[in-house]
Image 1 (cartoon, one colour):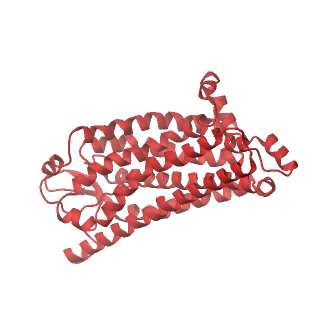
Image 2 (cartoon, one colour):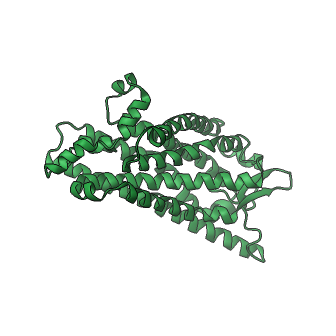
Length: 351
């Protein structure tokens, strides 16, 4: 979801990179993204195998299978981004992969964020309206609902379909970037189109791609926590630690990147005209690597945090995943039969 645009930069490429800071600020994101690639492919691949092939389809497995597919397909593209970052943002992979890789990146990053919000809403409904959930929370409905996040993510990726391409500089270097060269008859018109599109994209991405799902997650888990405390449904604070971990990890991973992206949008003209774009590239690389890391956290977050970690390590990992992703219908049905809310531990384990 990194913002790139082909607006002429002031000064040479090497001079601008000298302004970006120490070499460590360039190497650190590469290391973090490399770790994300390894853990994300392995962890999400295991979730896909367990949820997609070892378990019967339930509402929970459908949601988590889609989340794992989003994170897996995204992390699978990371070697291309690592190579580009290592080459100082140059793009040696051609026009098709320039567009295709960034479409996959944006669709799956947006989709991942929206799916987390859907899962939070599902958990909230199960806790607050257990009888309704027992009667109406079906696999068929889940399959229909899950289409929404993907369609919305695809719509938000339209600027990449339209504007992203490869641009070759006079020195022969090729970059994968937004190009507005054909969107106006004069330089001034093209600049206006570029600033308008990028500003609108940045604002929409912040509101729709972060603020709204983040608010939904916070509200849902706040309602769950309130219900847990009010009904005295637990004897310990472990479920609250799970809720805190879910919300905090999402916020910690994504907020720095979204803040830098928003500042880049607000100060777009000043940044480009004053030739300070590479400073923002450095900040974007640092914060985006943290946001990307969330894609490998999800398997660990939802499987391990809610249960005793040592116990999980002793047992078979696939068996642990299968237990974590199961509906636990027996206990839920018992809770509904007794006309009480499902035990919080059941709800969180189904998370």
